[in-house]
Amino acid sequence: MDTTPVNDNMKTGIKGWLPVIGLAFSTFIFNTSEFIPIGLLSDIAADFSITESNAGMLITVYAWVVALASLPLMLTFAKTENKRLMLGITALFIVSQVLSGISKDFYMLMISRIGVACAHAIFWSIVTPYAVRIAPEGKKSAALSIIVCGSSIAMIVGMPIGRTIGLLMGWRATFLVIGAAAAVIFLFLAFLLPKAPSDSSISLRKLPALIKSPALLSIYLITVIAITGHFTAYSYIEPFLAQTAGLSETWITLILTIFGFVGLVGSFLFAKCYDAHRKLFIVFAVCGLCVSMLMLQVMSFSLASVILLCVFWGTAINFYNLAFQSEIIRNAPQGSAVAMSIYSGIYNMGIGSGALVGGYVCSGLEVGFIGYAGGAIAVIASVLCIRKLVPALFGTR
Image (cartoon, rainbow, N blue to C red):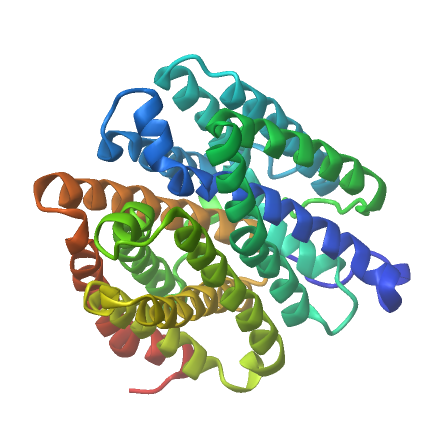
């Protein structure tokens, strides 16, 4: 995809950043919705009289729908103008949130989440390349950081507020509030986003040429493994902190907030330092995830150690998300949206698989073992990163 600015009026000044900020708001609300079931898992399970591992299927099914739908939907809408497509999927997102908020049973909730997942599948395929295209000239890394900041702020503000609303007013109210916030963002995007013709140069028959790059193949392989490991543990972090670490509801909310806050700091560091230290960011991200999960139970003995671990873990996953998206755009300058849709699908395959594995660990052993299970999976990703990805990206051995 052409990554040059869409028009000359958006090269400098605060007005040049407003469309990117608008997209960051949209990533905030999409990520809040995606991960809010993690913060409300126990309440949803209790309301429907099911186990937490069964309620975790909300995360698994959602992620697998995104994984399966990302590439087909992106190819279907490959020629759709970007602003029109963004507004369309935001509208679908709003309707689906309302359906989640009025769900009368678990199956209705699951169907509504599938609607959100379809919107998500297209959203994450286009939002990063779109933001890079409309950013001021020479500010691609900064634009990418702003987009991922939206995700971090969702962890800092969105998930804790959503969780608090759910605890005070019931989990359904959380989804309704998300829908209302998305409606406001829809209006923001409608006024601010510039039109951007889609990159229609990639078709199904051209996909083999797009993904033949050893670097892209390594990114995709490591992503499905590393993210499976990450979400084996992270999907059940709320019951882990309550049952294994023995923390109160208030402290669990605060720790989830800290997890997101370090991502915001990490986004700032990325914008300033990534271009000069790409290898360091990539290796730290993958290996940092591995170390964080293997140490999860060991570090659960005190509040201070849990916070310290979450700072490290949150930094690692933030660097991972930033660095790997940046490398996809770098290695697929033509057809970035389709390359990103493949990445989004694989990433969500990892989310769904991780939630499923974590559910088996919780029901077959106990929630305290989720870190060891996730860390063992991430060891494989760390080895592949050092032996495969680094040589593919930097030509070193």
